[in-house]
Amino acid sequence: QVQLVESGGDLVQPGGSLRLSCAASGNIFSIYIMGWYRQPPGKQRELVATITSGGSTNYADSVKGRFTISRDNAKNTVWLQMNSLKPEDTAVYYCHANYDYWGKGTLVTVSS
Image (tube, helix red, strand yellow):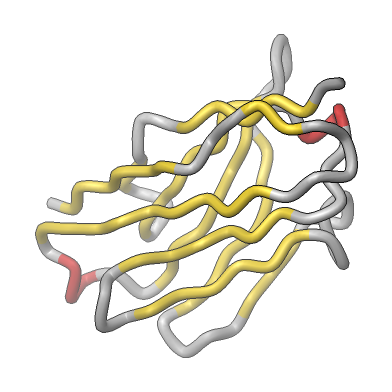
């Protein structure tokens, strides 16, 4: 089992930045890929970014150039640096490990 705890969600103005964190515990040695999904209000959950244990990354087209995913294997933590935020980035952001384990989510609201 893997437990994931997200943090860092907040209310931010358009154009602002936020950094989300996801700390993993439990059977962390089984983790080969981690990432972030988000669920905007009234919409389905969608991929934001993923990163493998080797550091390979993948981003949704909507966040390329604005968001950066990073990972510290020693600290069992993955981060999502979000810059140039837009109102359409408003969502609950969920961390996952191996697409099998999920955190409870952290709310990001982009609004003036």
